[in-house]
Amino acid sequence: MQYFQCAIIGGGLGGLTLAIQLAQKGYQVVLFEKENYPYHKVCGEYVSMESWNYLERCGVPLTAFNLPTLTQLKISAPNGQYLTHTLKPGGFGISRYKLDYSLAQLAIGSGVKVIENCKVNEVTFTDNAYQIETSNGSFISEVLIGAYGKRSNIDIKLQRNFINNKLQGLNNYVGVKYHVKADLPANIIELHNFENGYCGISKIEDDRYCLCYLTNAANLKKYNGSIAEMEKGILMKNPFLHRYLTEFKSFYDKPLVISQISFAAKTQSENGVLMLGDAAGLITPLCGNGMSMAMHASYMLSKLLPLYFEKKITKHALTNEYTKQWNQQFKSRLWFGRQFQLLFGNKIMTNMVISALKPMPFVVNKLVSLTHGKPY
Figure 1 (cartoon, helix red, strand yellow):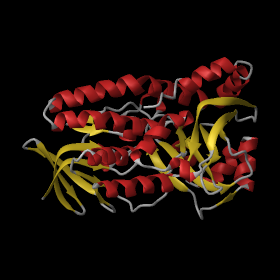
Figure 2 (tube, helix red, strand yellow):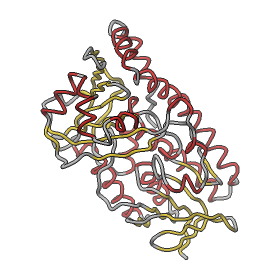
Figure 3 (cartoon, one colour):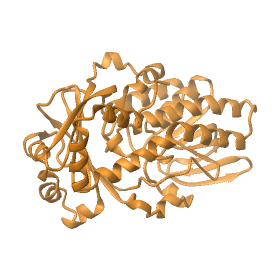
Figure 4 (spheres, one colour):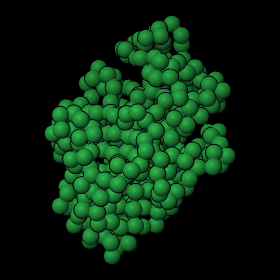
């Protein structure tokens, strides 16, 4: 078996940025990724400006990429009524295809053992280390990080509580994504509500726009699992989405789809496995900040893990301190995100809220600030 100080399950933004930082400090890191880079993911592909400097410190040449900056927000109700607002601190658009691949190359260059097309089948804790059984062999690691995204077979094996959490109807959502050719302003991110869901669209690199929407599984079931029929029957009742879904040309033959998305509260550790990114807690896409949260959490761990490796703190203290810092930074953002999710999922309520907020930009400012953090 190969031995590592840190093993990371999942090669998304949180896992990759953590791996890069640890490897640059001289630690032995292995990262398991079930796909092959580069590849597309269902994601809104909006990154708030709080993460710009951090990504450049990790080595991503964002300035050289010449990415679109997003400074305006437009939100519409299902009936087409809308408001626009200046977005502070704003964000930038970049595809996961480009960003994840850039980070994966940086990780490999930093000395991380990145194993692609690798499925983790079993994890056991013995003799103060984790034994990890994968489709590519067996590994031993002193620390194990779960950065595998919204849902995994590992969650079931660890018997995590959120799997069966039916509270507030926060389980069982479906995400759908396209890359499209659009004639929209390059500096605006749009959020268009429809019955039991909402759709975001904003510019990314290479003159493409990311169009990604979330809805509950009941909407899809109503149309016998047909994405196209659901879009015609529900989404296109919003006049903006009617135009975008009928006029904008997709670069995909068919959309990317994920299901069984849960916004129920999660724990930041399970049986000593430290959770990172969406595996630790998923903010609603309406708030648009999950990527920055994942990377900010990796920054926290990059400061805490060396203290453990150098035997300055115990594993118990590491787990407690990470959970404490994570909650201080993100717990309220997730809570507000869940409230927005419930508010904007209701057709009548959404129409009323958009109408009420139009003459109150100071309230919109406050709502945006609740879901964004400061540079780290």
